[in-house]
Structures are given as structure tokens and as C-alpha cells.
Image (cartoon, rainbow, N blue to C red; front, side, top):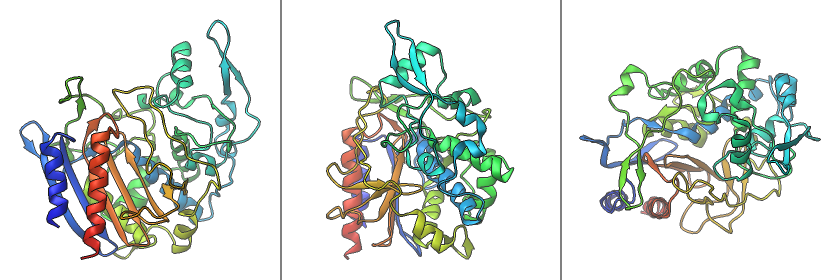
Length: 385
């Protein structure tokens, strides 16, 4: 396992990332773990370092919805507005008039749970799309990261099911879970996912037992060096957005991934039925392609595409990789990431999961992307030994 240590040690020494906490595991337990660098000024990274995991939250929100599906309380084709009537008030943005005023109309297609979960609903973030920041500037609409309920009212940019584009669908999905179940989403996730899995450091707020272990955030400046940056989910918001709201640790998130490797169960605690896991991890978007996300905010994110040219789809909770990546993950693998460069995958065929986590911007800059690839390749080489 020295190769895995060398990958993260050398990457941090080169300042390809400010620090790293990384793990590999199989269904039975953690196989390797390592740390490198300082998670905050004067404090070394540790396995229990607490991260703002941002979009690693999304699969958890989708898992919450899958729990309700498993119980017969929700279906993939349930119309969003049948549970949340206010969703029917969202309009579709067709463009802008000569004065820069948004041109809006009612969508012709009604969005479903599947659309929300797979990023095919028409709801799109402002970071990889030019129309959304223009709309927000013209209307004064707040970002979803504000934690305000009014921030849910992004317009659709295309008809549901028409294409894939990354956005706030899981925030709406979390609200559906709340409405059906009756518990607030943070309580639902704690009682139905985190506590059963022993994920005691995964919460929507930095609780007292976590505070001293919270990592700092870094951004790469024009000089190529990392400097401090302030970015975090809003504390005590009007609602917890399941697109971004969680804090967690590498060991906690690995327990969550191992639950999926074990087809819905871990250490005697069943979260999902094996049948539900098998069904929901299948391709949910057919032949709809997943395009490259082109940044409109280069200081915050690079362009993003995992394994260009390889077939990808989306399951009910993760990006799905539909063909083998030589020397790396196999067809049927699942994964995603958080904007501060916390990345993960799990590979049911090989029986392996991996996380590589830091707290840095820009998201998926080439230097980080190269480290992630080197880490995954080393993980699979170690499987052969």
C-alpha cells in the first residue's frame, strides 16, 4: 500500500492539493487509509478530519428518497407537483428580450422524482451555465447556497427529460421526503441512515464534537499558491438543501459506500432492500448523454467531465459508468464528488470503494484531476497483489 501513500504524499508536496485524506475499502472493511498535509493552519490532517462535503450530500438525499420508494411511499415516476404543489409554479426560461428581461413560460412536461434524482429536470446550477447567472442578475434571485426557501425557485432551462444538466433537483427531492415522511430532512437522514450506519460525524451542522476537527478551505490564486477561502453551507438555514448541506469524514462516508457494496446493509443494519439497490443503481436516463460541464466561474471550478469519451449514465443516486475504464473502475461503478474536491466511487464488480478528499478550489482543476486518477489506478493495482 506504499504506492497509495506515495500518491497523496507527493501530490501534497507538489501542492497539487493542500492536504489529503484518502481511503480504500471492500464490502468487509477498510483496506487502506492515509493522510498528508495540514487540514488547517498548525493542524495535521487526520482520518477524522471533518469536511464540507457539498455535492457528496446529493446521493444521501437520493438514498432518503429510495428508502421511501422501498417502503412503497414514493415511486420514480411520481410527479413532483403531486407532493409539492408549489413546484407547478416554476417557469421555463426561454431566453431574454432586448431589454435583458427573462422570457418565461410554463413547461410542457411535468417533472418526476426520476427527473430530480438524475439531473434531467431542467433545473440547472449557475456555475456551468451562462443563462442562470444572467437570470439571477436580472431578477435578484438568490443562489440555492443561501439556504433561503425562495432560492428553490430557479427556472427550468429545458423540458424535463429533454437532456442532462447539473442542478438543484436533489434539493427539491429532499423537500419531497420531508413532506411525505413528516420529519425534517436532517432528522430523517440521521435516524434512517447516519445512526444505523454509525456515521456519527455526518451532520447538517458542525456539532460540538466535530468543531475542533473541521478542515480549512483553500483556493488557488493567480500565483499558483493556495490561500484561505471562506465557503460553507449556511448554518441554521430555512431548509437543509440535500444538494449541499452535509459535513462528514472519510471513514463515515466510506461506511455509507460499503452499505452499497453490501447491497443495502452494513453490520447487520439494513438501509435498503437488495432488490431496491439493484433496481435503483441501474441506468435511469436511457441513452441521454452526459455532456462536459463548461465553467462560467473559473476561480471556483474547471470544466468537468469524468472519463471523456466513455459511456456514462445516471442511477437514482449517482453518476453511473457504463463501460470499463482500463486499469480503473468497471462498468456499473457509481460515483460523484463535492465542489471542494472531495471525490468518491464504488465498484460493485470489483468490490472496491475509494474516497480522496481535500477542501480546495477550483473544483477538478487539472492538478487535482491527475492526482485522483493516479490514486484510483494505484488502488486497482493493489487489488491485483
